[in-house]
Amino acid sequence: MELATALSCCASSSTTEKKEGLKALFTIISSDKQINTMDLKKIVERLTPLIVEAAHKLLQPLTDTLIALVRRYHEELNDWLNLLIPKLVNKCSTEVLPSNLEKYRIVMEAVRTSFDPEKQLYAVCKFIRDPVRNNVSVKTKHGLLMYLHDLMRGMDSAPSMNQSEVRQAVSKIFQWVDDPKNICLMAISEKVVCDMFHLNASDFTSMLATFPNDLKDRLQTIVRKNSFCLSTGSGINTNEARAGILETTAQINDFVDRRAGLPISSPRVSPQLINGLARSPYDSIPLRRASREDQSGSLSGYVLDPQGFANDPEQQEELITKIGEELSLHNQRSEERQRAMSVLSQITRDNLFSLWDKHFKMIFLLLIETLKDSDENIRRMALKLLKEICYAQASRFNEFAEMALMRVLDACTDESKLVVTAAEECGGVLATHVSSATCRRVLLAIIKSDVGEPKIHIAIKLLTKVIESLSATELELILDEVAPPIVDTYNYVSSSIRKESVVCLVAMIMLVGEEHMAPYLSELNKGKQKLIDVYVKRMKGIFE
Image (tube, rainbow, N blue to C red; front, top):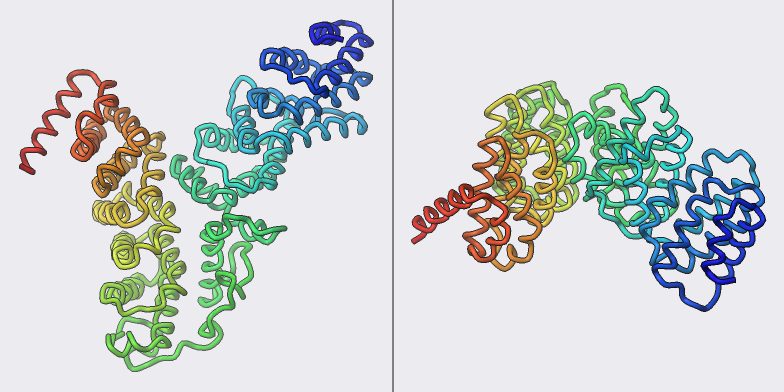
């Protein structure tokens, strides 16, 4: 039977003719003859409605044909995923006959193992975010989330998570969850979020920066709560090291609670482990007191002997343990914590501390948590200390750059002007001392989002610093990435954002020249282009 005849039979109202048409299609698809793109489109258009309406008698030839098609022609059929996966999920979610359900599951497994996993991820996310198509039953919503979960568990490479369809899908998923009718989606939604984090923690963290604070805090809590359970499953995830960021936060909280004698407030990982290693012996014995420290354990009377301290790892271990203890007491003992940060600042600036390999992560995370403190002086001091540590240990920040930038940008909207100033200074050091690619990715994600003008303003300001730290050649390679978003923000209603955008565009022009920037600036009206020219001439006059 020819293809046209087979397709015509599949469109017949007769079940017998449809069955014969499907069998003929299966033979054509399985033959050695290659089917062209136009004919593949016709086959897909005919099979898609049959997935929904197929009678029990047609199910076997239909599933055989679908499996043969996706296994042989999946590379040509990526656009079909947007329709295929939701329809299959819907059938699996609503089918009541076990024999029929098993057939649909076999087709879904063929789809999942044949198509590019990243394209499947984006296809499902596009469906979830679509306000017209996603008006489906709770069972189908659960099926879509379960499909994502199974898909991501089997992915070897890390897909890009910080994409508009993924961001919008995550927002939509939690709109679903907030509906009392969808309470059954909570558990699988949390699994999907953790899957995303563990697959690509770097991109996921950048994506968090684009969400409102309430959703961002919610997602961070979910990842923190579940990260240990996920990391101890079968196999070692390729992003395990980054996943340790939030896991370690939970471990440190547990460490703090135990040492302070406080009740443990939430489920946490084993207190016997930190960073996968046995705790320091200092956790099980009282801290040794010396004359330089008062007998109450406070650092208020601590006097540092620089030479002796630098050459005594045991003394360093003891001091950093005590500093960690103090910094862990959030919203308490403000004077003692300020003293602890002052001592840490001194040993950092004077390069007296040699145990960074062991303790950097703990120090970093405790300072990050301290940025939420109720005392504005503590918040300001924590930012100054982060800035100093970044100066001294810049390379160690690369693994945590996304988290650092996000929290510092949050601090730039603090109600205290002193904290805002400290945050901007800290952000400036991060922008010029850690990986420029990481900074660029996080800052552009914020600039393109709707997080609010203050945060977008400071993100553009920091991006300008990143750009100024690049060579002309480096900037030329990424102009397509950085120039269009700043041209867009130049059209903002807010005058402060427009002004910062001009400064950023001028910085680009000063590096690569007006000729390279002309294609991007052509999107602006004449008045805006003229203003940029004025600033460029002014800058050139300064440097001449």
